[in-house]
Amino acid sequence: MTQETISNQMWGGRFEDKPDDIMEQINASIGIDKRMWRQDITGSIAHAEMLAKQEIISQDDAQKIIDGLKQIGEEIAGGNFEFKPSLEDIHMNIEARLRELIGDTAGKLHTARSRNDQVATDFRLWTRDAIDEISHLIEDLQDVLGDLADKHKDDVMPGFTHLQAAQPVTLALHMDAYACMLNRDKLRFIDCRNRLNKCPLGSAALAGTPYPIDREYTSEKLGFDRPTHNTMDAVSARDFANEFLFCAAQTGLHLSRLAEEIIIWATPQFGFIQLSDAWSTGSSIMPQKKNPDAAELVRGKTGRLNGNLVQMMTVMKGLPLAYNKDLQEDKEPVFDSYEAIRLCLLAMKGMLETATFKTDAMRKSAEMGYTTATALADWLVMNLGLPFRDAHHVTGAIVKMAERKSCKLDELELASMQEIEPRITNEIYKALKI
Ligand code: ARG
Image (cartoon, rainbow, N blue to C red; front, side, top):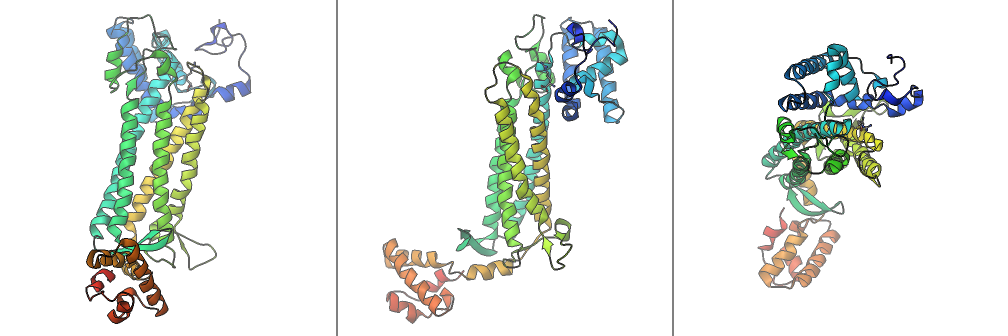
């Protein structure tokens, strides 16, 4: 058969006709999965080494294959590689180029392997790298929040419930709350990494392979903890991708809460924070404006992060064992969520590092809105032995009095408060001051 009559060099043996143009378009994933070229080459090198060690192919052939793969890696890294949609995906693009470079020996690489265990391996490797990078970015942001917490231990601000001033807190406590959320996010990513770090190679199409392969060897070479347990599960499991997408969505959700606070704090009405020029934009019509676009975009990316999770969960729903081509839809959402969460973490870090916190405005705001009322009630309980409900009632009356006099709680005279509860002493002012 000539090249012309073969519909596809990799699997076209029983085919006479070429695929329809649209078939080629819907089938091709190279535009997306070319991103995994490094992982594909690393995985193939480990596989070739194993085949030689087990004497399934000769050392000579393995060396030719490995040298060819390394050259392809250099070509791709240098931008000198032509990715062809007619060759479907990254795996077949690389193998076809290998054949151009070393001839028929290239065909031996795919011994004891299928694209199904190959892609599952590549994708796990890629996701593992992404998790390592994202965990570090989360740590960097945690550091920035930690530094802010250290710096603002004594800076008082209103703490809110229902976005109504509730009790005074410190900016440190507020920043540390986000550091805690991010810590859980990081642990979730690490947990996902631990679970995914098993090597599918050797599962082949779905039922394993009759060759005397050494799965422990490839697994170890590729930095996996061990080979996967069940071949059918290994080629069709993508819950690691779903977990990754959830981890990214949850992290994004936490960042969106912080972003929302930054947006509110940056309004002239709040005036708690001023973003640096580098992290704001102006308005083309309203010269007075300085918009917190980066924070808004971090908030907005939550839509895409949640969407990607739902997309992948929906792709997986009801899929029979084992591999189905639906699974090819797995990479785009994962790559997209990686990009989005990476940008969000970097932008949040940049914004916070360069922002000015208006601690005077925060303190002033904490002094308004009777935020020490709960402290007053607690004082009544602890010093006068009032049941809390009664103390709450007395405090309510005192707040009402301050409202009537348009003054802060600590500006009320002792005698006025004693009209409501005669046993109150001068000591009360300790509780009333911010
Ligand atoms: N590009 C494919 C994917 O991402 C590779 C696996 C193809 N396997 C197959 N049996 N057609 O899923």
